[in-house]
Amino acid sequence: MINPNEIRTKAERKYKSYLQSIINNENIFPLVIIGNKKPSKSIPEFRREIEELNKFSKERKGYGYNIKYEVRKTKNLGTQSLPTSILFETKKDFERFLNVEKEVEQFKIDYIKIIKQFPELFDWVKTFPKKVIDNSAKWIDLMKVCTYFKLNARPNLYLRELPISVHTKFIETNSSILSELLDILIEPFSNKEQKRFEKRFNLKFSQPLIRFKILDSKISEDFFSGLNDISTTVSQFNQLSLPIERVMIVENKTNLYTIALTLPEYKKTMVIFGSGFKVENLKEANWLKFVEIIYWGDIDVQGFEILSQVRNYFAQTKSFLMDEKTFDEFFEKDKGVLSKSNVQLNLTSTELSIYQKIKENNWRLEQEKIPLEYVKLSMNSQR
Image (tube, rainbow, N blue to C red; front, side, top):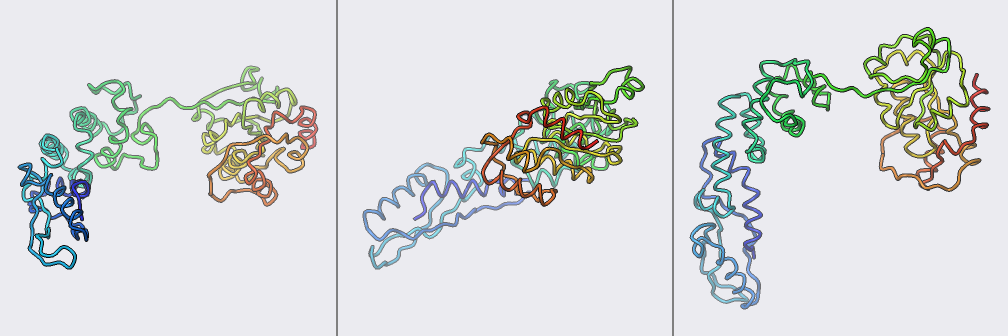
Protein backbone atom coordinates (compact mmCIF):
# COMPACT_ATOMS: atom_id res chain seq x y z
CA MET A 1 0.00 0.00 0.00
CA ILE A 2 1.15 3.54 -0.68
CA ASN A 3 2.92 5.15 2.27
CA PRO A 4 3.58 8.77 3.35
CA ASN A 5 7.05 8.83 1.77
CA GLU A 6 5.62 7.83 -1.58
CA ILE A 7 2.90 10.45 -1.21
CA ARG A 8 5.54 13.10 -0.53
CA THR A 9 7.58 12.04 -3.57
CA LYS A 10 4.50 12.19 -5.81
CA ALA A 11 3.47 15.56 -4.34
CA GLU A 12 6.96 16.97 -5.01
CA ARG A 13 6.64 15.87 -8.62
CA LYS A 14 3.43 17.89 -8.88
CA TYR A 15 5.05 21.01 -7.40
CA LYS A 16 6.12 22.39 -10.76
CA SER A 17 2.57 21.99 -12.12
CA TYR A 18 1.25 23.76 -9.05
CA LEU A 19 3.59 26.72 -9.60
CA GLN A 20 2.53 26.85 -13.24
CA SER A 21 -1.12 26.88 -12.16
CA ILE A 22 -0.40 29.98 -10.06
CA ILE A 23 1.00 31.76 -13.13
CA ASN A 24 -2.03 30.68 -15.19
CA ASN A 25 -4.45 31.60 -12.39
CA GLU A 26 -5.85 28.08 -12.44
CA ASN A 27 -7.28 26.01 -9.58
CA ILE A 28 -5.96 22.45 -9.67
CA PHE A 29 -7.49 21.39 -6.34
CA PRO A 30 -8.54 18.93 -5.16
CA LEU A 31 -5.24 17.39 -6.26
CA VAL A 32 -5.39 13.61 -6.42
CA ILE A 33 -2.34 11.45 -5.67
CA ILE A 34 -2.31 8.26 -7.73
CA GLY A 35 -0.71 5.22 -6.12
CA ASN A 36 -1.13 1.56 -5.20
CA LYS A 37 -3.76 1.37 -2.47
CA LYS A 38 -3.99 -2.41 -2.44
CA PRO A 39 -3.52 -3.60 1.18
CA SER A 40 -1.30 -6.41 2.39
CA LYS A 41 -2.91 -9.79 2.89
CA SER A 42 -2.25 -10.12 6.63
CA ILE A 43 -4.32 -8.28 9.24
CA PRO A 44 -1.29 -7.07 11.31
CA GLU A 45 0.50 -5.71 8.23
CA PHE A 46 -2.70 -4.06 6.96
CA ARG A 47 -3.25 -2.33 10.29
CA ARG A 48 0.35 -1.12 10.33
CA GLU A 49 -0.04 0.32 6.81
CA ILE A 50 -3.28 2.12 7.70
CA GLU A 51 -1.78 3.55 10.90
CA GLU A 52 1.26 4.86 9.02
CA LEU A 53 -0.96 6.36 6.33
CA ASN A 54 -3.21 8.07 8.88
CA LYS A 55 -0.28 9.33 10.96
CA PHE A 56 0.57 12.09 8.42
CA SER A 57 -2.96 12.74 7.16
CA LYS A 58 -4.91 15.97 7.54
CA GLU A 59 -7.20 14.25 10.02
CA ARG A 60 -4.26 13.74 12.40
CA LYS A 61 -2.04 16.76 11.67
CA GLY A 62 -4.61 19.36 10.71
CA TYR A 63 -3.15 19.77 7.21
CA GLY A 64 -1.89 17.61 4.39
CA TYR A 65 -3.62 14.86 2.46
CA ASN A 66 -7.14 13.54 2.95
CA ILE A 67 -7.93 9.86 2.76
CA LYS A 68 -11.29 8.66 1.50
CA TYR A 69 -12.40 5.19 2.53
CA GLU A 70 -14.95 2.65 1.39
CA VAL A 71 -16.14 -0.39 3.31
CA ARG A 72 -15.38 -3.49 1.30
CA LYS A 73 -15.38 -7.19 1.88
CA THR A 74 -12.05 -8.86 1.07
CA LYS A 75 -10.96 -12.47 0.83
CA ASN A 76 -8.00 -12.19 3.23
CA LEU A 77 -8.96 -9.33 5.54
CA GLY A 78 -12.72 -9.71 5.79
CA THR A 79 -14.80 -6.54 5.83
CA GLN A 80 -12.57 -3.46 6.15
CA SER A 81 -12.55 0.27 5.45
CA LEU A 82 -10.07 0.55 2.57
CA PRO A 83 -8.49 3.74 1.22
CA THR A 84 -9.85 4.51 -2.23
CA SER A 85 -8.57 8.05 -2.77
CA ILE A 86 -5.74 10.24 -1.46
CA LEU A 87 -5.91 13.93 -2.25
CA PHE A 88 -4.98 17.44 -1.23
CA GLU A 89 -8.20 19.44 -0.93
CA THR A 90 -6.64 22.91 -0.86
CA LYS A 91 -3.44 24.68 -1.86
CA LYS A 92 -2.83 25.42 1.82
CA ASP A 93 -2.84 21.69 2.61
CA PHE A 94 -0.46 21.04 -0.28
CA GLU A 95 1.97 23.85 0.62
CA ARG A 96 2.09 23.01 4.33
CA PHE A 97 2.65 19.32 3.58
CA LEU A 98 5.67 20.21 1.42
CA ASN A 99 6.70 23.04 3.77
CA VAL A 100 6.88 25.55 0.91
CA GLU A 101 4.50 28.30 2.07
CA LYS A 102 7.17 31.02 2.28
CA GLU A 103 8.82 29.80 -0.91
CA VAL A 104 5.55 30.04 -2.83
CA GLU A 105 4.81 33.53 -1.50
CA GLN A 106 8.25 34.72 -2.64
CA PHE A 107 7.72 33.02 -6.00
CA LYS A 108 4.50 35.01 -6.50
CA ILE A 109 6.32 38.26 -5.77
CA ASP A 110 9.25 37.40 -8.04
CA TYR A 111 7.38 36.09 -11.07
CA ILE A 112 5.03 39.09 -11.11
CA LYS A 113 8.01 41.46 -10.85
CA ILE A 114 9.90 39.63 -13.64
CA ILE A 115 6.97 39.49 -16.06
CA LYS A 116 5.97 43.09 -15.37
CA GLN A 117 9.45 44.36 -16.29
CA PHE A 118 10.19 41.79 -18.99
CA PRO A 119 6.99 40.41 -20.58
CA GLU A 120 9.17 38.47 -23.03
CA LEU A 121 10.15 36.16 -20.16
CA PHE A 122 6.60 34.91 -19.50
CA ASP A 123 7.12 31.58 -21.31
CA TRP A 124 10.50 31.07 -19.64
CA VAL A 125 9.05 31.70 -16.16
CA LYS A 126 6.18 29.34 -16.90
CA THR A 127 8.51 26.63 -18.20
CA PHE A 128 11.09 26.97 -15.40
CA PRO A 129 9.27 28.12 -12.25
CA LYS A 130 11.78 26.25 -10.08
CA LYS A 131 14.59 28.40 -11.49
CA VAL A 132 12.68 31.47 -10.38
CA ILE A 133 12.66 30.00 -6.87
CA ASP A 134 16.28 28.82 -6.95
CA ASN A 135 17.39 32.37 -7.75
CA SER A 136 14.98 34.17 -5.42
CA ALA A 137 17.74 36.06 -3.60
CA LYS A 138 19.27 37.29 -6.87
CA TRP A 139 16.40 38.72 -8.90
CA ILE A 140 17.09 42.36 -8.08
CA ASP A 141 20.63 42.05 -9.46
CA LEU A 142 19.66 39.71 -12.29
CA MET A 143 17.15 42.26 -13.49
CA LYS A 144 19.74 45.05 -13.27
CA VAL A 145 21.98 43.09 -15.62
CA CYS A 146 19.10 42.29 -17.97
CA THR A 147 18.04 45.93 -18.07
CA TYR A 148 21.56 47.04 -18.98
CA PHE A 149 21.89 44.54 -21.82
CA LYS A 150 18.47 45.43 -23.23
CA LEU A 151 19.71 48.99 -23.54
CA ASN A 152 23.26 48.03 -24.60
CA ALA A 153 23.10 44.82 -26.62
CA ARG A 154 26.67 45.25 -27.91
CA PRO A 155 28.64 46.60 -24.92
CA ASN A 156 32.14 45.83 -26.27
CA LEU A 157 33.47 46.15 -22.71
CA TYR A 158 35.12 43.75 -20.30
CA LEU A 159 32.83 42.21 -17.67
CA ARG A 160 34.43 44.22 -14.88
CA GLU A 161 33.94 47.43 -16.89
CA LEU A 162 30.16 47.14 -17.16
CA PRO A 163 28.48 50.08 -15.36
CA ILE A 164 26.04 47.86 -13.42
CA SER A 165 25.70 48.20 -9.66
CA VAL A 166 26.22 44.53 -8.81
CA HIS A 167 29.09 42.65 -7.19
CA THR A 168 32.16 42.50 -9.43
CA LYS A 169 31.85 38.71 -9.80
CA PHE A 170 28.06 38.57 -9.96
CA ILE A 171 27.80 38.08 -13.73
CA GLU A 172 30.58 35.48 -13.79
CA THR A 173 29.02 33.41 -10.99
CA ASN A 174 25.53 33.67 -12.48
CA SER A 175 26.41 33.41 -16.16
CA SER A 176 24.28 30.28 -16.70
CA ILE A 177 20.95 31.80 -15.65
CA LEU A 178 21.84 35.12 -17.27
CA SER A 179 22.56 33.39 -20.57
CA GLU A 180 19.09 31.88 -20.58
CA LEU A 181 17.48 35.24 -19.88
CA LEU A 182 19.56 37.29 -22.30
CA ASP A 183 19.12 34.76 -25.11
CA ILE A 184 15.46 35.73 -24.96
CA LEU A 185 15.71 39.42 -24.11
CA ILE A 186 18.33 40.35 -26.72
CA GLU A 187 17.79 37.43 -29.06
CA PRO A 188 18.89 39.19 -32.30
CA PHE A 189 22.25 40.06 -30.72
CA SER A 190 22.94 36.77 -28.92
CA ASN A 191 25.65 34.60 -30.50
CA LYS A 192 24.04 31.37 -29.38
CA GLU A 193 26.66 29.16 -30.98
CA GLN A 194 29.20 30.56 -28.48
CA LYS A 195 29.41 28.95 -25.04
CA ARG A 196 31.59 31.57 -23.40
CA PHE A 197 29.47 34.36 -21.93
CA GLU A 198 31.67 37.16 -23.23
CA LYS A 199 31.60 35.85 -26.80
CA ARG A 200 27.90 35.13 -26.62
CA PHE A 201 26.96 38.65 -25.54
CA ASN A 202 29.43 40.86 -27.38
CA LEU A 203 31.87 41.58 -24.58
CA LYS A 204 35.61 41.91 -24.60
CA PHE A 205 37.54 39.10 -22.98
CA SER A 206 41.06 38.08 -22.16
CA GLN A 207 42.07 35.94 -25.11
CA PRO A 208 44.21 32.84 -24.74
CA LEU A 209 47.77 33.13 -26.01
CA ILE A 210 49.32 31.06 -28.75
CA ARG A 211 53.02 30.39 -28.42
CA PHE A 212 55.12 29.72 -31.49
CA LYS A 213 58.77 29.53 -32.45
CA ILE A 214 60.18 30.70 -35.79
CA LEU A 215 62.88 28.34 -37.05
CA ASP A 216 63.89 30.59 -39.96
CA SER A 217 66.24 33.32 -38.70
CA LYS A 218 65.53 35.54 -41.74
CA ILE A 219 61.80 35.55 -41.00
CA SER A 220 62.42 36.28 -37.33
CA GLU A 221 64.72 39.20 -38.29
CA ASP A 222 62.43 40.61 -40.97
CA PHE A 223 59.18 40.38 -39.00
CA PHE A 224 60.03 40.17 -35.29
CA SER A 225 63.33 42.09 -34.85
CA GLY A 226 65.18 38.81 -34.34
CA LEU A 227 62.74 37.39 -31.79
CA ASN A 228 61.95 33.76 -32.51
CA ASP A 229 60.02 32.54 -29.44
CA ILE A 230 56.79 34.50 -29.39
CA SER A 231 53.35 34.45 -27.69
CA THR A 232 50.40 36.41 -29.01
CA THR A 233 46.61 36.48 -28.68
CA VAL A 234 44.42 34.24 -30.80
CA SER A 235 43.00 37.15 -32.79
CA GLN A 236 46.48 38.53 -33.60
CA PHE A 237 47.76 35.05 -34.49
CA ASN A 238 44.83 34.63 -36.89
CA GLN A 239 45.94 37.80 -38.72
CA LEU A 240 49.59 36.79 -39.22
CA SER A 241 50.93 37.11 -42.74
CA LEU A 242 54.35 35.46 -42.95
CA PRO A 243 56.30 33.67 -45.71
CA ILE A 244 55.81 30.38 -43.85
CA GLU A 245 55.46 27.18 -45.85
CA ARG A 246 55.62 24.55 -43.09
CA VAL A 247 54.07 24.49 -39.62
CA MET A 248 54.73 21.88 -36.98
CA ILE A 249 52.26 21.62 -34.11
CA VAL A 250 53.58 19.93 -30.98
CA GLU A 251 51.53 18.67 -28.06
CA ASN A 252 53.69 19.78 -25.16
CA LYS A 253 56.53 22.10 -24.22
CA THR A 254 59.07 19.29 -24.12
CA ASN A 255 58.50 18.68 -27.82
CA LEU A 256 58.78 22.42 -28.46
CA TYR A 257 62.23 22.51 -26.84
CA THR A 258 63.24 19.27 -28.55
CA ILE A 259 62.47 20.72 -31.99
CA ALA A 260 64.28 23.95 -31.12
CA LEU A 261 67.38 21.99 -30.12
CA THR A 262 67.18 19.60 -33.03
CA LEU A 263 66.36 22.11 -35.73
CA PRO A 264 67.64 25.55 -34.71
CA GLU A 265 67.45 26.64 -38.37
CA TYR A 266 64.73 25.35 -40.66
CA LYS A 267 63.68 27.46 -43.63
CA LYS A 268 60.19 28.92 -43.79
CA THR A 269 59.10 26.85 -40.80
CA MET A 270 57.24 27.61 -37.59
CA VAL A 271 56.62 25.39 -34.55
CA ILE A 272 53.40 25.95 -32.58
CA PHE A 273 52.85 24.83 -29.01
CA GLY A 274 49.41 23.26 -29.31
CA SER A 275 48.99 22.59 -25.58
CA GLY A 276 46.95 19.43 -25.91
CA PHE A 277 43.28 19.89 -26.75
CA LYS A 278 43.76 23.67 -26.70
CA VAL A 279 44.71 23.33 -30.36
CA GLU A 280 41.09 24.40 -30.78
CA ASN A 281 42.46 27.95 -30.49
CA LEU A 282 44.04 27.52 -33.93
CA LYS A 283 40.89 26.62 -35.85
CA GLU A 284 40.11 30.12 -37.13
CA ALA A 285 43.64 30.83 -38.38
CA ASN A 286 42.67 30.49 -42.03
CA TRP A 287 46.21 31.08 -43.27
CA LEU A 288 47.13 27.67 -41.85
CA LYS A 289 44.99 26.06 -44.56
CA PHE A 290 47.62 27.03 -47.14
CA VAL A 291 50.75 25.61 -45.52
CA GLU A 292 52.11 22.15 -44.86
CA ILE A 293 51.10 21.04 -41.36
CA ILE A 294 52.81 18.35 -39.32
CA TYR A 295 51.42 17.26 -35.96
CA TRP A 296 53.68 15.65 -33.34
CA GLY A 297 51.98 14.30 -30.25
CA ASP A 298 52.37 11.50 -27.75
CA ILE A 299 51.56 8.02 -28.99
CA ASP A 300 48.56 7.56 -26.73
CA VAL A 301 44.81 7.83 -27.22
CA GLN A 302 44.77 11.53 -26.45
CA GLY A 303 47.59 12.21 -28.91
CA PHE A 304 45.65 10.61 -31.75
CA GLU A 305 42.40 12.28 -30.70
CA ILE A 306 44.15 15.66 -30.85
CA LEU A 307 45.65 14.74 -34.24
CA SER A 308 42.12 14.04 -35.46
CA GLN A 309 40.96 17.36 -34.05
CA VAL A 310 43.70 19.26 -35.90
CA ARG A 311 42.97 17.38 -39.12
CA ASN A 312 39.30 18.35 -38.83
CA TYR A 313 40.42 21.99 -38.93
CA PHE A 314 43.19 21.50 -41.50
CA ALA A 315 42.68 18.51 -43.77
CA GLN A 316 46.30 18.47 -45.01
CA THR A 317 47.71 17.64 -41.55
CA LYS A 318 50.21 14.78 -41.40
CA SER A 319 51.43 13.02 -38.26
CA PHE A 320 55.08 12.85 -37.24
CA LEU A 321 56.70 10.06 -35.19
CA MET A 322 53.28 8.65 -34.32
CA ASP A 323 53.83 5.37 -36.13
CA GLU A 324 54.10 1.74 -35.08
CA LYS A 325 57.83 1.52 -35.80
CA THR A 326 58.60 4.39 -33.40
CA PHE A 327 56.24 2.98 -30.80
CA ASP A 328 57.71 -0.53 -30.91
CA GLU A 329 61.28 0.77 -30.71
CA PHE A 330 60.90 3.07 -27.70
CA PHE A 331 57.82 1.89 -25.77
CA GLU A 332 58.58 1.19 -22.09
CA LYS A 333 55.18 -0.26 -21.10
CA ASP A 334 53.93 3.02 -19.64
CA LYS A 335 50.23 3.25 -18.87
CA GLY A 336 48.19 6.02 -20.43
CA VAL A 337 45.01 7.85 -19.46
CA LEU A 338 41.82 6.00 -20.31
CA SER A 339 39.63 7.62 -22.94
CA LYS A 340 35.83 7.42 -23.05
CA SER A 341 35.62 9.06 -26.46
CA ASN A 342 33.49 7.18 -28.97
CA VAL A 343 33.51 9.74 -31.78
CA GLN A 344 34.72 8.71 -35.20
CA LEU A 345 38.29 9.92 -35.58
CA ASN A 346 39.78 11.55 -38.65
CA LEU A 347 42.76 9.20 -38.89
CA THR A 348 44.40 7.25 -41.68
CA SER A 349 44.01 3.48 -41.62
CA THR A 350 47.59 3.12 -40.35
CA GLU A 351 47.03 5.65 -37.57
CA LEU A 352 43.71 4.08 -36.64
CA SER A 353 45.36 0.67 -36.31
CA ILE A 354 47.90 1.82 -33.72
CA TYR A 355 45.28 3.99 -32.00
CA GLN A 356 43.05 0.97 -31.45
CA LYS A 357 45.97 -1.09 -30.17
CA ILE A 358 47.07 1.46 -27.57
CA LYS A 359 43.46 2.18 -26.55
CA GLU A 360 42.71 -1.49 -25.94
CA ASN A 361 45.87 -1.88 -23.83
CA ASN A 362 45.92 1.63 -22.29
CA TRP A 363 49.50 2.19 -23.48
CA ARG A 364 51.46 5.40 -23.89
CA LEU A 365 54.75 6.48 -25.40
CA GLU A 366 55.56 10.07 -24.50
CA GLN A 367 57.50 11.80 -27.24
CA GLU A 368 60.19 13.08 -24.86
CA LYS A 369 61.34 9.45 -24.52
CA ILE A 370 62.38 9.40 -28.17
CA PRO A 371 66.12 10.20 -28.46
CA LEU A 372 67.08 13.54 -30.01
CA GLU A 373 69.18 11.88 -32.66
CA TYR A 374 66.20 9.82 -33.81
CA VAL A 375 64.04 12.96 -33.98
CA LYS A 376 66.72 14.77 -35.95
CA LEU A 377 67.09 11.97 -38.48
CA SER A 378 63.31 11.79 -38.92
CA MET A 379 63.03 15.55 -39.42
CA ASN A 380 65.90 15.68 -41.87
CA SER A 381 64.26 12.96 -43.92
CA GLN A 382 61.32 15.34 -44.45
CA ARG A 383 63.38 18.22 -45.80
